[in-house]
Image (cartoon, rainbow, N blue to C red; front, side, top):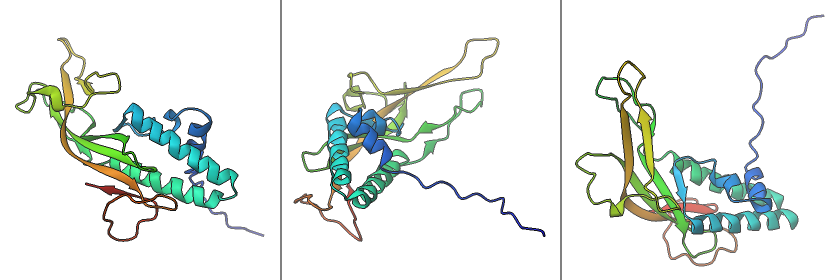
Length: 200
């Protein structure tokens, strides 16, 4: 008797809730470290901790399915912000590729509403370019240092090329919670919004 075997494997379902539970029992970095193009302020990390605690409370209160839906929704929003604008295609003077440089970095702070974040979009510019002037509107990390991405050229006989990219403020907005218990956010939403939506 011959049996057919299916060589295709079904991918394991994504556990959207797991990093949030880890953040509640550990640190917000269990969530925030997954998104390389998002810069969380200390207050933004505090908001992540609040959401993590709320999701754990739902889980302990017998509403795990609701917690999973909410976690999947905010993860989807974070992914959209993390990939906003795609990558910059650039090369060194010798034509060698620079590699992936995010076109935007989004900073998340605390909006002061339940589950809400402030958003600031920062667009990439090259150090020394025409846009590299007054750096007061450039993105800084939580320690106040300039947020930079450096890329090194191919190693050859001479010194390696270094290209530094900085991020300049472009526009702001919010990532606001509209789900159960959210209260008034004084915002307009279009279409179906389950839990969170991005506003500009």
